[in-house]
Length: 71
Image 1 (cartoon, helix red, strand yellow):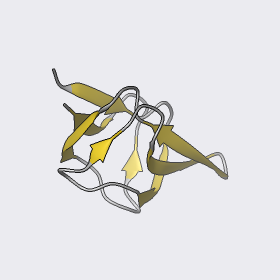
Image 2 (cartoon, helix red, strand yellow):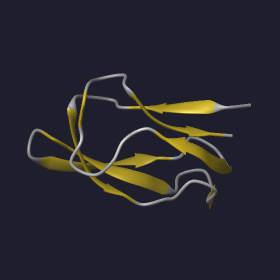
Image 3 (cartoon, one colour):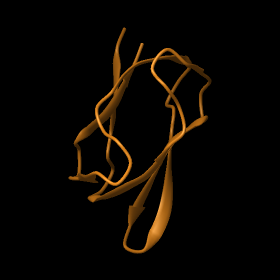
Image 4 (spheres, one colour):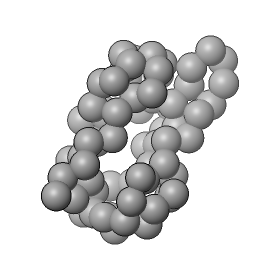
């Protein structure tokens, strides 16, 4: 079952730490989102594989925007 990873707040993607096809475990860091001058890691909500990445480094994102999909 696919799980969408959403931006919890507006900000800028600083770094993407995974690639499509990577296996991730619950609580692994997926990417770093800068918001309000703070770097906020975005974690995997569960074990899975990275199916799709919708953003790249330096992209500005809105709250609730889909960042990536895990399956």
